[in-house]
Image 1 (cartoon, one colour):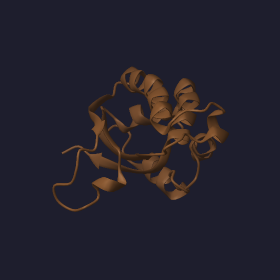
Image 2 (tube, rainbow, N blue to C red; image 1 turned 30 degrees about the horizontal axis):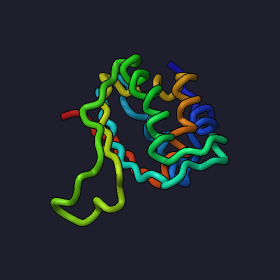
Image 3 (spheres, helix red, strand yellow; image 1 turned 30 degrees about the vertical axis):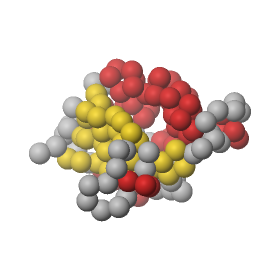
Image 4 (cartoon, rainbow, N blue to C red; image 1 turned 135 degrees about the horizontal axis):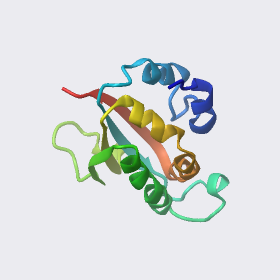
Amino acid sequence: MNHSIEELMKYYGDGNNYPSKSQWKTLLAGDLNRPLTVVNFFRLRQQADFTIIQTPMTGEQAFDEYAKTSVPKVAAVGGHFVLRGAIAGDFIGEDAKNWHIVAIGQYPRRENFIRLLEDQEYREAFRYRQAAVENQTVFFVDAM
């Protein structure tokens, strides 16, 4: 399947709290047939960004709106969440204060994750994630 970095950047951005062009290239350059685990850390806004969704709501409410679509869409492409939940506190280090939510998704192949990003309904719901999230860090983990 031929994936376009420009098309992905049009919907998901280029840097500034979203993947940079080089990060998009890294995603697409990986072995599309290998399993992929995606680890997400989210810090939510107190109030969702009204300029993105034009509806007053909290960051948590906007993130819940995003999850209503994203969770079933992850399943539709063959993925599943290993873990989703609120950060409960630090054990080693002192970074828990920086994050509100962690979500770990697994996909049978990298291609499945890219298919999620190319899904039109997922793209439409993603604006709720953009409105909800103040900061995020996302890691790819190769299955061992």
